[in-house]
Length: 476
Ligand SMILES: NC(=O)c1ccc[n+]([C@@H]2O[C@H](COP(=O)([O-])OP(=O)(O)OC[C@H]3O[C@@H](n4cnc5c(N)ncnc54)[C@H](O)[C@@H]3O)[C@@H](O)[C@H]2O)c1
Image (tube, rainbow, N blue to C red; front, side, top):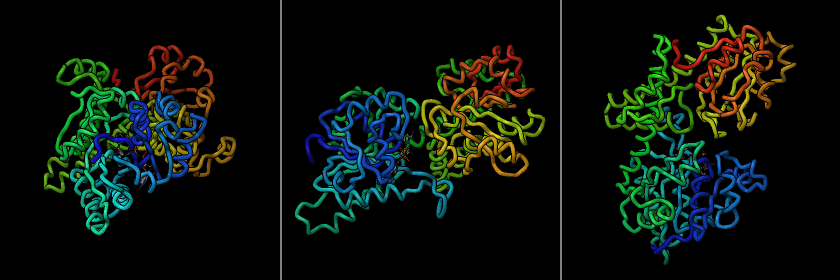
């Protein structure tokens, strides 16, 4: 094993691989960082001269890319060459929930991780430290080790037989603040056995993170800690959303309840905002992964406890779409509804598991005509999520009575609001908190409704504009 890392390869140029390797390249200019992916289009966009075309939107990311790209940060599809030359390989590929076969609907599909392990085993030279960056079920490192050692025993005749160490180094960044979270993490977690391999990875992080924040655990604790962190965060959102529903029924206000409980140091004030339900690629998948793990070990009460977090979230999203229909006199058929925000949270273009998908699909199913606005999500992405091609509005008007699903993406905020019966705020983009409601009221159909699922609208301003108003968790 070398005494210092000179070359890193990251397999997977996604929401984690891209930003996390960009920050390593920025903080460690002496290390060459190669990010590789099988998705040619994604790599093309990472290499685009127009930084607005980067495949991932994160505040501050384009600046880091501009500084490091083609200096010591490279994006490519050359898998073999980059694996061969790497001292350390990060596996940062997708680990979605299995859709069929054993464990379908709960267990993670590890086929991409397994494919990576095979590629690493096949092409690596000398000693390579393999780092699990993807969120993985507990004991996945064992699977990776088995694959690597199977190839090693096949190559016994080789003079320079490759050797490996496997570490777990889960990523805790939150989308929307990924660059900040990577530069100023609460902690970095490294699980593993070989002290030298752990030290080499710690040395990289210690370039910008104080040593007391770099935690060392055994490999299984590291894997489980990541699942547990996401399960706790998801549980907190389902908890406050359940209380929001009680607030609406009783006359309480969830913001006041959150403030009251959040000032208790044992509870803490973060992550207590009621919203349209958690989204993103991780929370649901990781909670279900934990459920699967608990079931596997016969811990059924534990499995049921965590599964209820996901059930509550699904129920909550439907609750919002039902409520919109009820407020609009029990039908939205043929009505225009403006959807503000399609990303699962602000400051990201990620739509995976966004509450907007369920809520828009429900409303389309009820016959509503949707005008969708989002400052960062592209029309093509919405089309994939809703599994329905967009229609031109004039065509919609002509075909009101056919049963086709109808929506358009609108670039201009006030054009999105024009002629609508209702506006639903689903993502907390800053520009939505500055909407001129008097102006909006003049161009909406009457009676007009504003639904604020993110508590970003000033209720007084909406009331002054003579608009009907509903907001999450407000029973007053
Ligand atoms: N997105 C987040 O906020 C976040 C945060 C922490 C951890 N994670 C975890 O990190 C992992 C990656 O998540 P993501 O959001 O970056 O996923 P992603 O889907 O955005 O990116 C994964 C990339 O891996 C590529 N890939 C798959 N198999 C490959 C192979 N064999 N060779 C080369 N490239 C391959 C895909 O083409 C894709 O571009 C997941 O396990 C996720 O749970 C995600």
